[in-house]
Length: 339
Ligand code: DP6
Image 1 (tube, protein in one colour):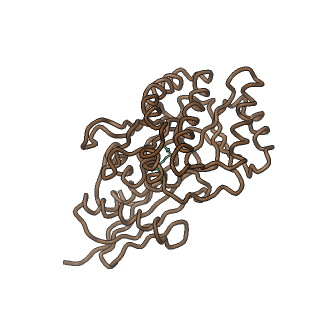
Image 2 (cartoon, protein in one colour):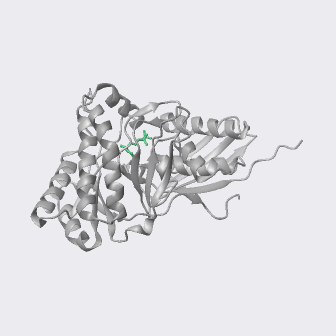
């Protein structure tokens, strides 16, 4: 029988920013979280990944942003391909090429967009046709937050309660066009350190050592419900304070982890303080800050307040640049690729 190379398949996926953070894993093998999380999928920014299985290869070839991947990033891709091979009952190695249209080191959640795009491209290249839900459950095994990047708009990733994880999946709760006035001003700070410890490891340190973690777990379900309601009503007066309350809760459990996890720089802290000052001066919530396990800050505001908020934040020393993004569509195949 002739050995044939498989078809190439390409998939694009966006990053997302969590409004309610995923932080803590109850089952590391299945990637099941302790708490449900809620995020906004971002427009404009994309990871684009092409996968082709090739019987002539004796090892996976992985190229990330134009350079051969090595070490941890390569191992993560190979482990993920192993799962896809097991699912598809195939054993050929693969060529993987992935590019971000934003700087990887910028801290804009490239693992979320990267593993969502890899899940789509690798399953298609292997001849599997998964539902969005199944794709999101698979992407989760590469990076937890990738499960949310499959979907567009406002996305909830349900933690579920079943030990087998069948009720643990992400889904869109409001479409991208639901709240047209809402914008995310991404504030990129100069000299943001690159992450030394992967979030999936850092969060387990928090689970083990932070005295604040249990309280956070008790509070999160109520906060998530209130945030969903605020988004549903497009109500900035409820939405902005809740986004900041959640970010502060996430930061507190990080800071009280032993050894302490401090993701912010002095500039990031100045951005948080300036958002608080803007809200105080306006006498109403005009904007909300949030950040993930990195130094850049996402500031949500409404279109009408964007020019003022942007001017104030861009003027802070140490802010490299600001980028305006909006809720956007989820992941999908790139036309011209297989199937
Ligand atoms: C703070 O497991 O998705 O962004 O270890 O880099 O793959 P990696 O990250 P992941 O953890 C994300 C944690 C978070 C919060 C969130 O996105 O919900």
